[in-house]
Length: 420
Image (cartoon, rainbow, N blue to C red; front, side):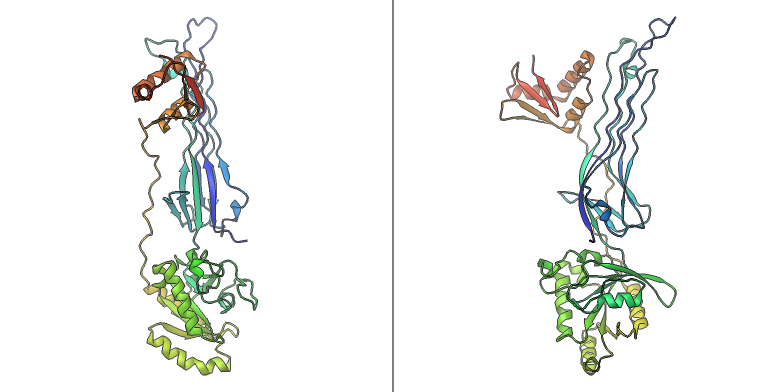
């Protein structure tokens, strides 16, 4: 089954813990602190793999976790960094945040990549806290938790030419005749259930990528037939080959209905240049109706070409007309500017709320990160965390919220007892 959109959750690696350690060596009195720092956690990166053509690699997979950094050691040994987790995506993948839909990246070229979740920094060992006044610090930091994000990956096939039309117009047959593609071909509606790609060589030796889009019927933009789920794949094409079934009751009406669906889905699709191709021209009935259609199409200023995919005639004319239209097509403006991913500033941002059981909940990226990085078993580390509460204004905010000695204060995964 062709998979062109997935939702995943990625979590970068936690940073390694810094350690509390003191140098102990014979004949070296008061060796001093030598606890090393932890290593950074692994990042999560999405990178284009040109051999991928769909998102099927993600079928059955939705959660991805990068490697954590190693803990520090004695003798000022730093922990090893966690390995980055590189997730492959096909060319043409649009990466958004799941929820608000913010565009993180549009990955189209071989080697394109984007960092989507940053690994947590390693905690500092007690050697980093030594000063002339504090020569034996029993204080270190745990590793910072890795960043976690929910992502929506949407594939938009990269093709020069998109082949569109009503069901059973012969789009797959035309693709097979123009390229080496071997799509499924049958005489029943909706034989093509997913886009097919093929590569054709023009007269000038240029290689063109063609995409055969499943058939559209009236109401497709509202979910009728196969719906509009595949229309995104022709957004990147420069020109559309609109294939008409010459033996249909009303080929021109079919074309108008398909164009209305394109416009209802995205006005930019309807504005793309089109090369109209009438199929089955070798049939006497189609040949008799051809002059009327040609006149109608010329009146609408749409370039019309007669071609028969079945007998493989006039195919060079189809490719030549499509190439000329593609050369004359204007590049569309980017849908959105792709931002560089930077974590938002969160210094000092917090919220104090009362929970149903009477406990107080303090939430905010900075304070929750500080709690996760605190060694609660070391008194110096606890006092440092208390100073952070006062410095950020959380202590005063709790008092204004009515906190009393003995009340529970929850920060992240930790629950503390308030004492004045």
